Amino acid sequence: MRQVIFLMLFFFVASVAVVTGKALQEAEKSVLLNVSYDVIRDFYKEYNPLFRRFYQTQQGEDFMISQSHGGASKQVLSVANGLPADVVTLTQTNDIEVLVGKGLVAADWAQALPNNAVPFGSVMVLLVKKGNPKRIYDWSDLVRENVKVIFANPKTSANGRFAYLSAFAYAERAFPDEQQVHDFMRRLLRNVPVLEAGARGATISFTKRNLGDVLIAPENEAALAAQAFGADSFEVIYPSYSAYTPVLVAEVNKNTAMNGTQQQARAYLRYLWSEPAQELAAKKYFRPSNEKIFKKYTALFPSVETFDVNEKFGNWQTINQRHFVDNALFDRLYIAAQNIKE
Image 1 (cartoon, rainbow, N blue to C red):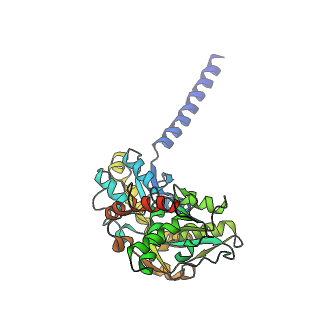
Image 2 (cartoon, rainbow, N blue to C red):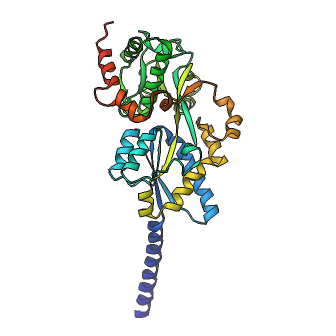
Image 3 (cartoon, helix red, strand yellow):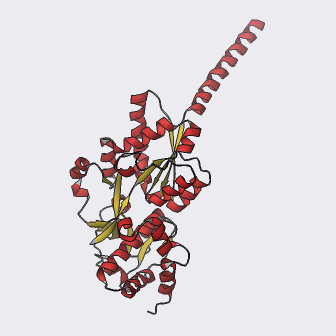
């Protein structure tokens, strides 16, 4: 009887050891954290398993990939304050430069990857209800009294800033003096019933809460929304002139060194320029930097005259000081817009 009990105890301890060993192996498996602005989540949802299969084939090992998405400003602040990101995906150079200033990202981050660390990008477009009942075709239509406009808050969202700057650039082209430009922007902002914190929140307000007549959004976000809700719900309108919105990626070197994830992080970012990743980007309505892939998908990307916000308005420090810090031009225009008489 003692022998039986001994054997039972032996096999129990052995099985516990096996289970514990497996648990420890899982715990030791690397976890890569990608902290990103909100409207790229659909791309990474498919990119992550694509890359893991590639990496497992090449390196014979696997690792977990965790995602954090939100408004760009909030994400940058979170990483700066200790969120242990291994890589970041943002759309403004100054956001990454904030992390450089904190000693988290290497100063040469843009030179560490092809095309100044821009694997693909987007443009700002207009999403309207199917049939375009309000006949909205360009920025000039957004100041009409019968049009309600939805876009993300430029104070908290990078895509909100690109939306505002697209309209501002159009106004500067259309009008000869600054007062007329400001009047145009006040009339547009008067038509904005709500400013959501991020681009995805603005999309939800327009598509699900039925707020507004038009959504200003990146092409990828607008096209995916139109696709998700069906061809009978929404359609994308390309304005005459619009901001190009780059997707910027960088390794958070201080964290990868501490986490032992340098190899995985660098492979993860480099693979964004691979043909499979560029194809996936195109299918998610991002304009790929690979010219061969871009030409293959030209039907998805109507021609539009674009501009680089930094070439037009200066670096982001200059832009923010003029437009987006407290009591700067955006605040003044928005407050004045609320006082415009019908």
